[in-house]
Image 1 (cartoon, rainbow, N blue to C red):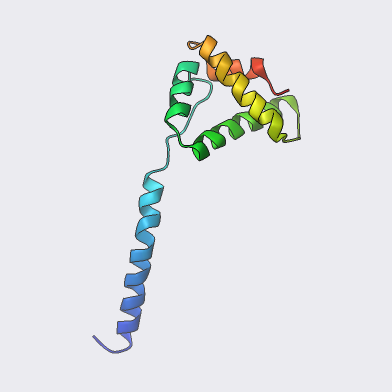
Image 2: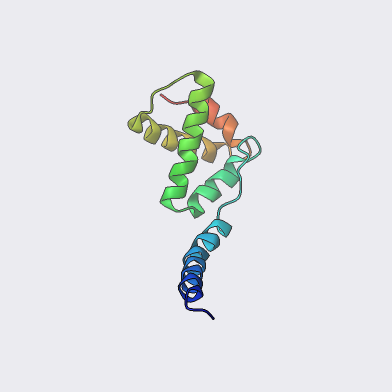
Length: 109
């Protein structure tokens, strides 16, 4: 191997090694969620099995969806926490209903 290609080969190898964790992480992404099809029972089980960050993302998505439907443009952290608690309680009472239906009923205060 010519001397000029050694640094290029070493650089290419380092790039491949560095990219491997990124590629592995992309393979571990969660599956898409169809909130119109997910029952409250499934939703509660999924939230219980999720880490705090994933659960927060899911609840933020629901907040954003409902805000889009209602035209609300303000993110209130206090109301998001209250909404999350009320949604989980509502779903616990109606495990066979779709989570999005219960979320719309609960709304955001």
